[in-house]
Length: 251
Ligand SMILES: NC(=O)c1ccc[n+]([C@@H]2O[C@H](COP(=O)([O-])OP(=O)(O)OC[C@H]3O[C@@H](n4cnc5c(N)ncnc54)[C@H](O)[C@@H]3O)[C@@H](O)[C@H]2O)c1
Figure 1 (cartoon, helix red, strand yellow):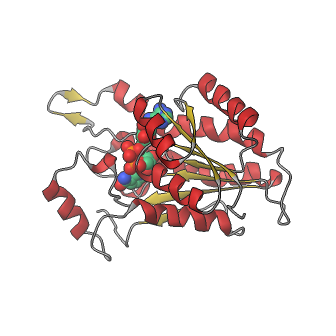
Figure 2 (figure 1 turned 90 degrees about the vertical axis):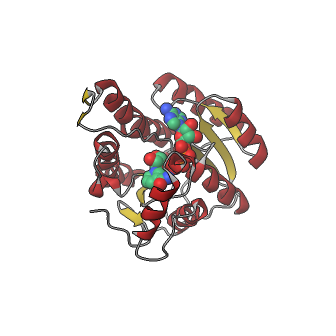
């Protein structure tokens, strides 16, 4: 699908990978919509990059429905949806203070997995009514999983299981939505230099960078955006989880 003029929704668009994606889609002529939690920061980022701002918590069906209705009325039907909203709390299954907090586990699944599915299911209903292009395409959905979906580390049980869920839904989503001309792909990023990683200490970040095969550094958000562009533009990619990690394998 060509990106120029396409209506493109990015959840988690106020920061990191989502923000870089919006900037690069806008540079290719897309009409961009930034969806994120309601905050002054989200509003300012949308203004800064010239995106239409839709405040929404992806876990709220009401807010997502309201946001999508708003987009339909004020901008038009969504052609491209990139799901980047996510959280990454760390905790051991059994730690110094006892068992893993159950609410933290449930919240992580709620935002990263259930929330992502919520956006996909509701957005696909709008996409299905798009006029197909010459290849029969009506929409492209790109979800963000993680290499933690297969290489989860200690302290990542909630995050890793949420991201394995995202990777697990790629093929059935593609199979369900293929008949409407909607492709679904997921990206599994390695370690990217975004605000999510800012809490990690400098020496740990250096160690992480050293463990990448090549290039020996953290990924740059614009490299994630580069892959997003390619996945949108190449019509034969569908139903796949693609690692973007400089060859890193976490053991
Ligand atoms: N940075 C990395 O190394 C890395 C690696 C693998 C996967 N990922 C995944 O990439 C995605 C983007 O991560 P990032 O590094 O840009 O993080 P980030 O923290 O910079 O951005 C995440 C954004 O999601 C938003 N968000 C959180 N909860 C939300 C909710 N309930 N509803 C709507 N928006 C919500 C936040 O407000 C924030 O703007 C996440 O899904 C993350 O798990 C990141």
